[in-house]
Amino acid sequence: MKLNELEAVIEAILFVSGEAVSLAVIADAISMDKATTKAIIKTLADKYRDEKRGIHIVELDGAYQMCTAAHCFDYIRSIYKSTKRQGLTQSLLETLAIIAYKQPVTKGQIEEVRGVNADHAVNKLVERGLACEVGRDDSPGRPILFGTTKEFLRYFGFTSTKELPQLDENIVLNSLELAEIEE
Amino acid sequence: MKLNELEAVIEAILFVSGEAVSLAVIADAISMDKATTKAIIKTLADKYRDEKRGIHIVELDGAYQMCTAAHCFDYIRSIYKSTKRQGLTQSLLETLAIIAYKQPVTKGQIEEVRGVNADHAVNKLVERGLACEVGRDDSPGRPILFGTTKEFLRYFGFTSTKELPQLDENIVLNSLELAEIEE
Amino acid sequence: MEITLQLENFQGPMSLLYHLIERNKIDIYDIPIFEITNQYLAIVEEAQKRSMDVMSEFLLMAATLLEIKSRMLLPKAKSEEGEAEIDPRAELVAKLIEYKRFKNVTEEFKEREETASQIFYKEADPSLHIFKQEEMVELENFLDGVTFDDIYMAFQEVLKRREKKVDKVRSSFKSIERDLYTVEEKITYIKDLLIISPKVSFWEIFRENVRKTEVVVTFMALLECIKMKMVSISQAGTFNEIVITKYIGSELNEA
Image (cartoon, rainbow over the protein chains, first blue to last red):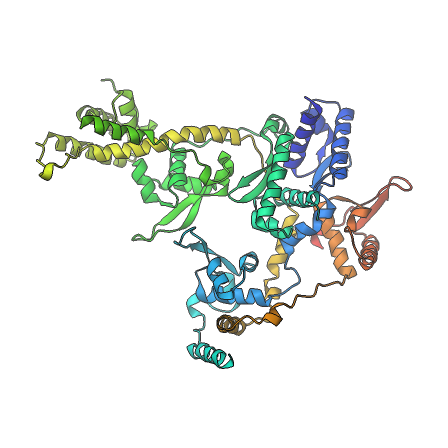
């Protein structure tokens, strides 16, 4: 095997194992002695580090492990706990309200009501377990339909979406009239 | 962020996630629009492939996942002594093919093509994560509709169901020709 | 003809029928229905003696074949307006063709199955569940203080606003970015960092282009971590890289 093939094999082995792999096991797999293997891994690890790659190889007591680079950590965490400290924002609250009352509803329909892109808000609500996919619309592109989750109902003490308080038509009407007067 | 920093973040996200990550989530994490993000991922995936690296990036239905390169298979197997995967039986393959091309499809529709009860096969496929419920048909009894999963794409190395091989149209063409000759 | 076929070897009636057609090298568009029906029935009868369970579907097909056979025996009804005669076999042929199309493609599926089985995916890092869990238990916090009235009012509000023009002044307000770092936050940051990466270099805990205050707070957090025996610091020699690892015995995950 050529050097870059050996590197590829080591890369694949470290990737798939997900934990530290001993030098002996790696050396065995590529049929090389330990010293050579160690040198190859070192070269590979240095290359990752010098190129500021998102994946690094670290040594731990004579074993090697692939892990994410520390400088990428914030982005990874942003995916998994992006909403950690912030509560329900106005934008999320409105989106949730639209989903609750208009379900099943597509992102497009939400956007139509709020007039802004709904991607982020809907994703966040799905992530938080407040909204979920409930099917597909029959319209072109078969967009995903969203609805509220069981957790949502449970949290607010409803057993079914049918129990959601009816919208007060008067308030809506009044507010529309009010809007007209204001204009 | 510079391009190689963006690449590093994408690399780290795909490495750590262990499942297909949607384009939207990645785009969100690096604060780029989807089209740009997609182009960056494509460049990165191509680079991996061209350099014959041990890790590849594959697209699965608009999401991305990291996996080992096929050319490293033998070495990985030598370490993990993984027994060869039990392939699908002819009966499961046929059922899965019907689901793949006709999705969303009911058990009844599958039975119509194969002339045999589809309960067992469909259950097995759902159990293996290759097929899943995708909704309900509007026909009487509202039968469950089935479709293929991301695992199906992974299992056969497709990037999307749009990539399925063309069904042989010749068989039908012949019949037309035959009909013409007979006339 | 010899009957060596066993019903158990077939995936179903279509599979058996298809096999018979192939074995007899029959043109699928001109099936000798008598011959095929006889062969089919012979196999089914043979199998019937052994098991009744798998039989129903095969029997259904047998019934279909017999029906076609009888319709072929009937004198052809004259169609009005010279419409083309419908071959009683047509529906069966259409079904066989559809079945064959799917059967054909399974060959390619099998090849792809073989190739794709040489590729491995990694399980998610088990540490990640900590992040996800944190997120899940927080639903209460997330919705803290939100009542259903708020949702109700929000919807009314949205409807109302839809009628009005967007308030241009207000919508141009940008949120103010938080620029406050606490030692607690940074301790969590260092701990989380060590969950994903078992070994981190000293310089790696500082993000690029950080402000001075953040560096100071991060450094204080690191000192605190050392004091609380959560992390270990090592250095191979003077001016060498300072390496931060998990303190042996400390269980960051449970923190």
